[in-house]
Image 1 (spheres, rainbow, N blue to C red):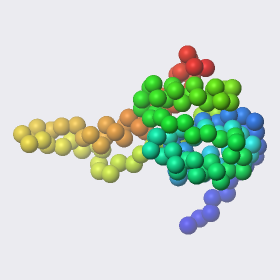
Image 2 (image 1 turned 180 degrees about the horizontal axis):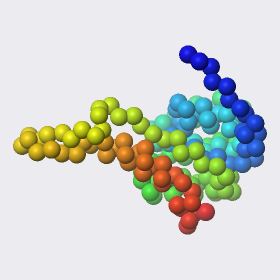
Image 3 (image 1 turned 30 degrees about the horizontal axis):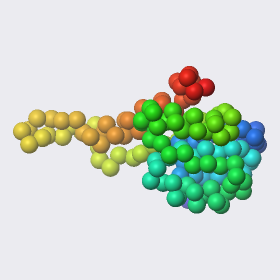
Length: 150
């Protein structure tokens, strides 16, 4: 597998800024959170409540664990996402950068219609879930769409 070179110059500009990253308890989001923290940023890991332990373990390994918090929330639930933003603002005084990282992969073809027991075609529930998380959740994460908070 090819090694990816990361230009960390931009990360140095994140020092002393607050970064909220959705879906950051695991995978690419967790690696992104760790990089921002290594460069002196306050990091808000926003992810589903079930990933709190994983996120807390990750934060414990950060270079600056006191500059990172986990905030539970589901990006497709407006009230939960709003609460994430409010918690970040209350803790760090504002949010400078949002990384809309949360996303899911489909486990079946999302555009296929599925016949029900009567032979009628029905919408694929997996498709709805993928669209809700990957599209709606990303749009919900854009701070300019949350004017009452910012």
